[in-house]
Image (cartoon, rainbow, N blue to C red; front, side, top):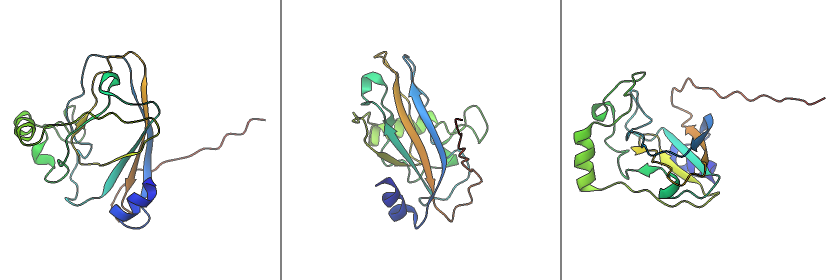
Length: 161
């Protein structure tokens, strides 16, 4: 289903060039609100992040906070740092304040095994896991086939005797 949505949104034959896990351990701290597109990028859709929670995500165990609609008009002009900087991708405080007044963020409950798809440019942040159980989700990025993405995923096969 995620591949079909990526095909429809990004054009034919998108490439998955990033595959990882995202784990929230018990914590009381939030990530700064940021965009994963902390580099010069097109203002049209070019990449989708696909997340699959391996347990039900709730505000109590750190479900990701998302700022709906921020993928449009997002760019380096709303970010504190540049690619490679410690603050890279972090959204400027006055931009957050203005957006919060217009459309506050949400922190949804997402059932285990669901598929979450968001534009790479969307503002978001990891929230505290106050529950104590480890919250894990898979993370994949699908890039449009036309986008100049230098990332590559390598897969290895290991034989056991």
